[in-house]
Length: 149
Image (cartoon, rainbow, N blue to C red; front, side, top):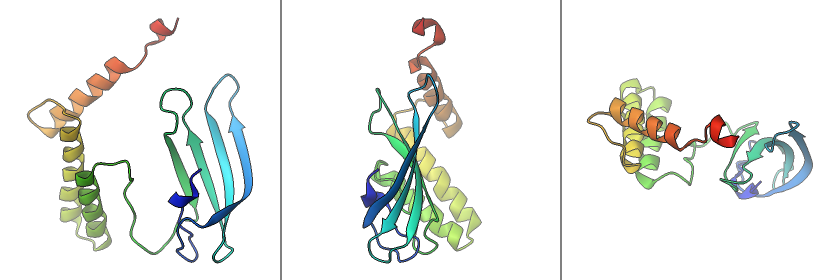
């Protein structure tokens, strides 16, 4: 787990952590491994619990993680893996939610989604058709049980 991605829930410091505990849970006959880490902030000495999973084989290095407790203050940050246009719309959607501007939040969230489907070169005359196009492409790329033997 890259500690540079973590923010301390207590002092707001970013990326300054030392590992205090690491545990793993693996299902039999499966390659996926669920990791449970406890990190100590080197600034305030507070602890955060991080649950994460990394890909093995195809997609190695791609992972998802959750942190508890999460910081209560500060703005949420978009993923650094997202395109810049997506980040811009996502930030505006969250700002609108925080200010209880529901209509603006809805428009910005839809704009973020529309940006992504266009970025992925989805085909279709409206957002619904473009999403369905991406879903059908994804299904055709997924390995079927028959091909796995």
